[in-house]
Length: 253
Ligand code: A2H
Image 1 (cartoon, rainbow, N blue to C red):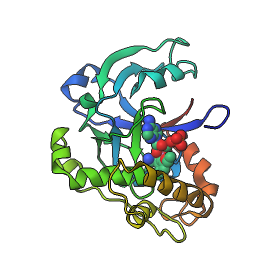
Image 2: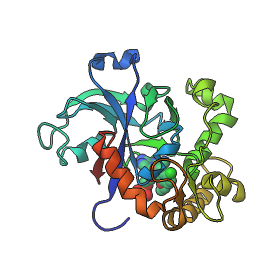
Image 3: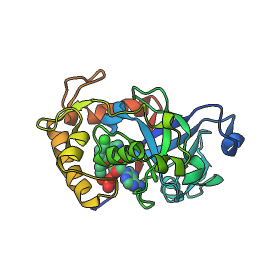
């Protein structure tokens, strides 16, 4: 870990109506699962949202009336970043576990998929970000490995009540080109390093390191208004655009 706080972009993934019965009490309010990312420029390629089935989450109300869902730890950090009416005080509305929010139908910014679902990822840490992760399997080896696990393993889908429609139609989308790795870098590295599952920690770490720096310095966007531009030149622009449109917020920890 570096010195000083890390800045994340929180991507607001909007719960679609009708809300499920355990979230019905919010039916007059916009509810968002919020995912911490370092890669806002990859949001064109979102295919699903990850939650950990056994982590605890909370739903809480922001000063603007929005409802967010994340870990309590993330909300505690937000309490000192002007998210709530009263500084330091989290307006908790509901306690949840990951299992309670699996299979939700969401709308996420920029992605080509109109609807995406919350799916289980067993390697999510409860002490980083919001405990909710947005999935970009074209460019994140962790995301591609976890999505491939769900596609390959019917019992895994069944265990968590995930239907085939929530998983099978979703494939990595080519959104950026990295020299030598092609336009689906995570898939290329998964195959090249012969990664077996989301628990293949050492190889996934290697893949992540390979893709991150090279993607930042040599990656070129293939889609959207900044098509053809280098990632390092558009990362901040895309982050700003998302924030201006109310689809993301900045969060530090
Ligand atoms: B990244 P860092 Cl395309 N547990 O977003 C596990 N992973 C988490 C997490 C948690 N609690 N919170 C955030 N993350 C993931 C996009 C992405 C990410 C791409 C490529 C690489 C990548 C789409 N998923 O991360 O330890 C989130 O996934 C590579 C590390 O602060 C977030 O950015 O560096 C990143 O890890 C933050 O991890």
